[in-house]
Image (cartoon, rainbow, N blue to C red; front, top):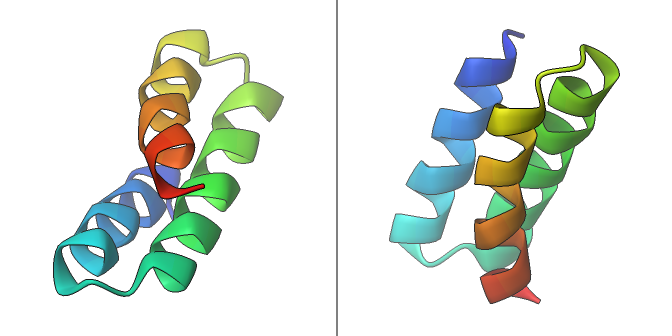
Length: 53
């Protein structure tokens, strides 16, 4: 699955109130962005992860 799809799923699940699922998708997206060296996108995923914890 594309990292941008994972990012979108994280936001969707957060809006649905499914915080555990949102956290899982956001974490997967962030780790993938880091692995690919996409620091801006990884930083964008850090904020939702912090608010979900």
